[in-house]
Image 1 (cartoon, one colour):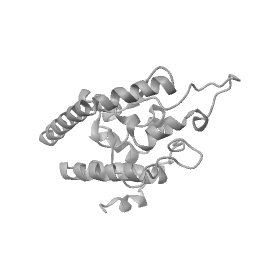
Image 2 (cartoon, helix red, strand yellow):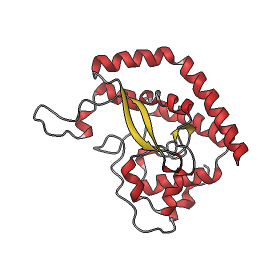
Image 3 (tube, helix red, strand yellow):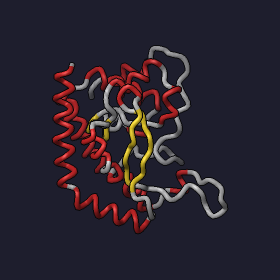
Image 4 (spheres, one colour):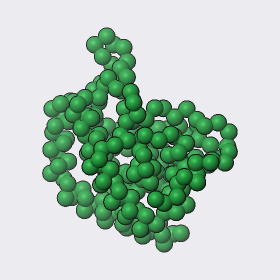
Length: 216
């Protein structure tokens, strides 16, 4: 198991460093455009749970305006995101700073997406298993519906990945991710930015959707 971890870490470090170096002009350009269209800070930072639930600071390009409007009332995310922000999200360009998280060893290229800290107390034991590996920039759930499928189905796919992870599966997911970016589907749920909030799935139980996670 340690050998597999070291191989995956070497793969992540190499691919992350090469990708960041090659795309540094694009990263700089997007940073300037974010500053112009959305203001500062350019980078969105938020605590997220990683491997074994340990917290780290996630880095992404900012895609929304400030959460308070002219009336001082809090704005919904759907009102805060701009057309430029939607473009960044639909092309996944807002995720580029996460390559720094990969190089730091806080994330992997492929793995379950790092979600909100407050979700930790809402997972079933089965769902909590998604934290047995490093979170990823992309993952099995992201190439099989992304935000268009239910939370329970996404978590079942995350756990399926934990049990079946391999270098070849990671390469397949990376290839499928490129296709998903071109298609730009499953990005947001209707009326939401991303997915609706996960409120929990109740008691620990066997998940019938687990069988839907076999490789396609």
